[in-house]
Image 1 (cartoon, helix red, strand yellow):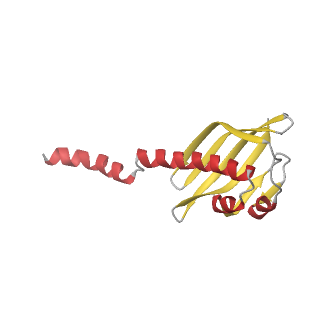
Image 2 (cartoon, helix red, strand yellow):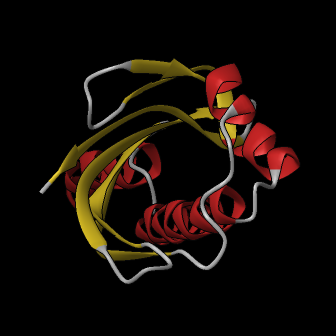
Image 3 (tube, rainbow, N blue to C red):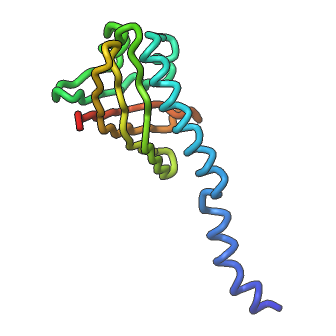
Length: 140
């Protein structure tokens, strides 16, 4: 009996120290929802939602190679009325209090012109809440 407990102890310790699968899956779902919320907030120029999503340290690299801060994003003009954005092929990876989302953002202008952007967004859990800390986007 003592031998089986002795052999099981490392396994049980590993289980208690590792992140539960359901927690990682929940974090992935939260990150995916944040991505969708972010697109909607950007399209509707919802600054309050953007303030909540973006960390104060947020930095973005635009497709033109320029850097924008959180305040730059909040002061940017809204997307043209009638334009749309659709996220596709989004993949999320969570590692403790850090997460990354990669995918494509398909933008359609009101006149029907389209552009596809590859993106990578970095997230950090701060005080129990996920925040976007960095973004990179490139035109495909």
